[in-house]
Image 1 (cartoon, rainbow, N blue to C red):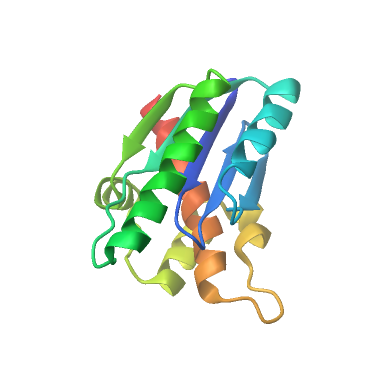
Image 2 (cartoon, rainbow, N blue to C red):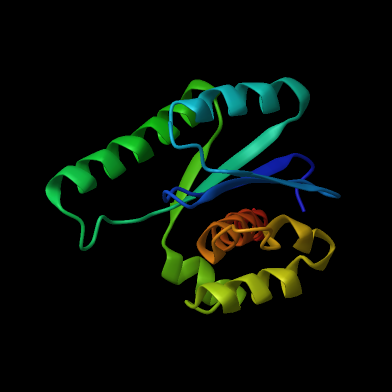
Amino acid sequence: MADGITIGIDPGQKGAIAFLGNDFLHVDQMPEDKGAVLSCLIAWTKRAVIEHAWIEDVTPFGMGRTSAFTFGRGIGMIEMALMSCGIPLSRVTAARWKRALGCPKDKGEAICRASELLPTYAEWWTITGRESKDKAAGRAEAAMIALYGTRQR
């Protein structure tokens, strides 16, 4: 693994941002206000070296025009936050990172695969209370995107 932190981002509404280092993982649920990502990144850059960020390259397939525009605008805000902090960015399709890590499409199975790949950190995607499986899967997938990115470096 690299000496610094690799960020993995699942940019969906139920997605997350994962910060993966040599001996730790921290995951934050994706904020509704994508502009809040900048504050989060600034806080991280003050306490650690962030080497690279990987964001899932998504398309607004099946969305209406207004939803697609809002979704694209949110991704643009995330990308601008990364650029503002001087964090190098790469995009990766879900098909590519999932194939590389042997991750199935099913949300429940994706959670299981994350637990296999990162067993020490499985508490990050444990479903708690009335939380949806989709939010837990978003955290697991963000962590796996960070793992994919670490392996690419």
